[in-house]
Amino acid sequence: MKRLTAKEQQLYQYHLAQQQLKHTRQRQLILDEFLKKEGHIGIEEFYQDLKRKYPFIGYTTVYRTLKLLAAAGLAREISFQDGLTRFEHSFAHPHHDHLICLSCGKSIEFCHPGIELLQDKIVKQYRFLPEQHKLEIYGYCKKCQMSKSKCQMKSKT
Amino acid sequence: MKRLTAKEQQLYQYHLAQQQLKHTRQRQLILDEFLKKEGHIGIEEFYQDLKRKYPFIGYTTVYRTLKLLAAAGLAREISFQDGLTRFEHSFAHPHHDHLICLSCGKSIEFCHPGIELLQDKIVKQYRFLPEQHKLEIYGYCKKCQMSKSKCQMKSKT
DNA sequence: ATAGCTGCAAAGGTTTTGCATCGCG
DNA sequence: CGCGATGCAAAACCTTTGCAGCTAT
Image (cartoon, rainbow over all chains, first blue to last red):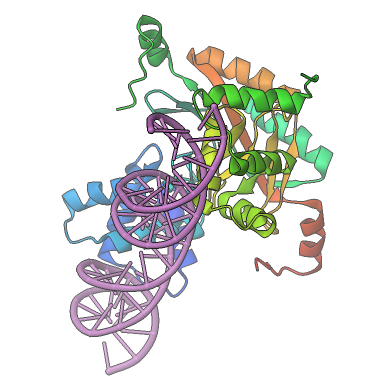
């Protein structure tokens, strides 16, 4: 058995979580592709990507595998304000938060150690035991600020 | 004309926002009840509450009025991880964030000035123009921590 | 009287589930 | 072989919208 990369370790963790679950071609492919994705990805979008490469994969399987990954702790389910469910790695991607542009909809990831410190202070006050957090800052990205200043149009396509 | 309370001012702001919109019994009632609600409230839940008192109010009206309030800046649409849309006052309720218990589902509101400071630092770095933010800390509330330590059951009812 | 509101019912858009079939172990 | 996985199709769920009738200006 070869040495494991961090990713593969996680992969095994996934297998473990699977308990008496089977290893299948679809699951492997979905996991592989998921690990390649950098941002957060919606189910439908991810499914489309996958289908392009592997037309034999069904939506349901993608959906269920993503849920499985989340249950195994490999993925995290996140939801912005648009009612869609998205997933992102919950590992090798330690933690980050998002700046979300209200104009173009893009989201920018950022990390700031201050958040953890702040969180510590807050939870202490409420005797709350934190598990994870989510900070989203909504506003306008650099690019959209520039176009806004040129004309006040809100191109929301 | 009598003096206005903060709430009434906002109420008028709402009317203003209405522009050529009409004042109706339903809208008034919905607004009144909404202002009484302290936390964040889901559409369905709110509708049920209202219907109990005023059976002639329809879901659609509640839904549309809530959207209206949000558009007028009186309410804020928020969504946690359960796919439901909730609303909360966006005024007289300056700003706050949430601690959400993964066990009992309750959410606790908190305010911490440090968040604004942190936000300032972050956006500056990305030349992002912030409009609002949302910080949610998921974990276990005091009460659930205690029951957890007694037994590891996860009663998610 | 007229433009805007209501609310029922139905459409939309996602997420979930049922079930017969397929495939890993 | 047997049990779990797959994927189609359909169910469930919320959120939105269409429309005929109703109601404030």
